[in-house]
Amino acid sequence: MDAARSLKQNGVKRHRLSTRIWHWSNAVFATILLMSGLMIFNAHPQLYWGAYGSREDYAWLQIDDTRTTGFVRIGNARVETTGVLGLSLDADDKLRRVAFPGWATIPTHYDLAAARRWHFAFAWLFAFGLTAFMLVSLFNGHIRKDLHVRQREWSLSALWSDIKNHARLRFGDAHGASNYNIIQKLSYIGVIFLLLPMLILTGITMSPAMNAAWPWLLDIFGGRQSARSLHFIAAALLSIFVGVHLVMVLLSRPINGVRSMITGWHMPSPKSDSAESMS
Image 1 (cartoon, rainbow, N blue to C red):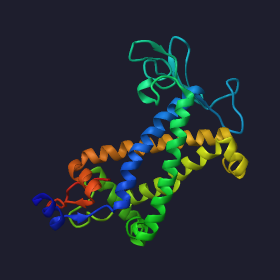
Image 2 (image 1 turned 135 degrees about the vertical axis):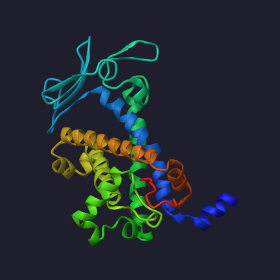
Image 3 (image 1 turned 90 degrees about the horizontal axis):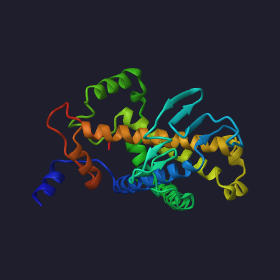
Image 4 (image 1 turned 180 degrees about the vertical axis):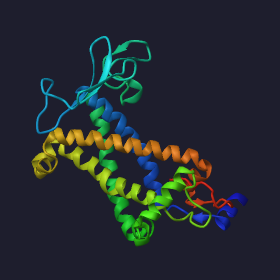
């Protein structure tokens, strides 16, 4: 009780309830979507541009094997990935000739039908969750107060100063703990309003049923295979964002950062150069 009282007396309100719920639900949804998506990719481990694509067509990305080695090919560049991608061993030391190993997929064994059920079920939860978060953030002022990039923040000097602070692991201070810095704002805006909608819309574009209802999506993304490629790229970018996010949390004050995302309250450091989590 004393710790909770101290937190509310000395802490700074950092995250709204809607943000915290969306953050933790997305941690679950995105993980399941990624792992089930990798299993779906295993069914045809090649990506194309345009409306059509088959094994005989040129793929701009291929994760496959030569029966003796696994490899990843992007354009004309090819890298051997035996043991990880293309060709690996399962938990029973049996050879698996699939793009992604079982520990990275849902289900862990090859089952395209089950992977699609997992993926589609959580894709709708993911899409509805994003829509609800956007609407709530619009009405409670989160977008206007926390994500709006103000005129003074657009200056190159302000951006360069923030980049230098990040390089020095100075992500915030005791007086600005409740505010996002410019790098955080641009990152979150890019993810929430560009990357996540891209994932959802390209996923819808790959559905024949949705093509019948919204055929204009195929025109926007240049065909089903282009939508599949963009979907894969967006998922890769989101994975990179999450990886950087976790690194920044670990490099800063991880206990304080995780606590603020659970309770909403952040405890500022008495030092002016204290590290601030990107949560």
